[in-house]
Amino acid sequence: MKRLLYKFIFFRLLGWKIIGTVDEEVKKCVLMVMPHTCNFDFFIGLFSRGIIGLEMNFVGKKELFMFPFGYYFRSIGGAPLDRTGGKNLVDAIVDIFNARQVFRMAIAPEGTRKKVTELRTGFYYIALKANVPIIPVAFDYSKKEVRIGKPISVSGNYEADMNIILPHFKDAQGKYPDRQFHV
Image (cartoon, rainbow, N blue to C red):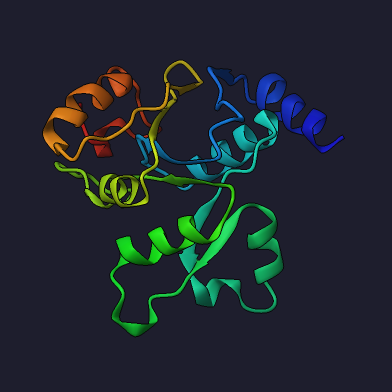
């Protein structure tokens, strides 16, 4: 029932479409979501997740998962991030990947909704250390499309791998194009 409601709102009322899908056999991956220029991107992601019908996740600081909001954030795929013991962000997230059977983590490598000229690299090193593929996901507001690419295994050569990954985002336009990273 919830899936039908998501489809009605996303496809009919908002006029968006989803091109591609995440193969359910891919149990662990990094969903690289770009461009990220506004808060509404979160809802585009939630609708897409609900329509596709697979568990997809995000991480947030552990304080977000305390009462009263913890149940809600977990129910929509959130995972609390524990960085105690001096862990860096990448290692803390890799620990989550290692502890779960299924973890498809969505992350925006722009790292902010403000203008950026370089991507943050954490998403790449998470995929490398967790030994999971990156799936590029473009939110294109100009065409109202969520475009999901094929899984890409990373080699450890960031520049070479980005030359394979970034073309997926060519021509994708964020809600505020002047803020987005330009491929």
